[in-house]
Image (tube, rainbow, N blue to C red; front, side):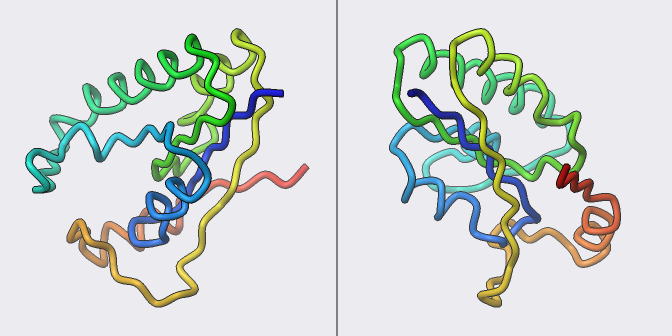
Length: 128
């Protein structure tokens, strides 16, 4: 069985670190805005970054990679629906994991506290 693992959580929660423990087939929007090891986030780049991430995920699925992992913030459930749709189209089971920052890590991307608090208050979680 092929699996898509969707890792959700605030910046600094360890999504990327954990993703690479699960698979080498990892998709993150952050990779799109990282050049030569330097992270250069901008709001304007985010639509293209997320489109690129979705295309990368689809390429892994078309190659029948056994475990594909997507690690993005995904504050709202609708944010990861395109990945669920891809999984259905390509015969992947879907698992979502919400990452919590229980290890005291600070986010390496310099997201300010106001933005983190807004993300936290808007984070949607559905258990049933």
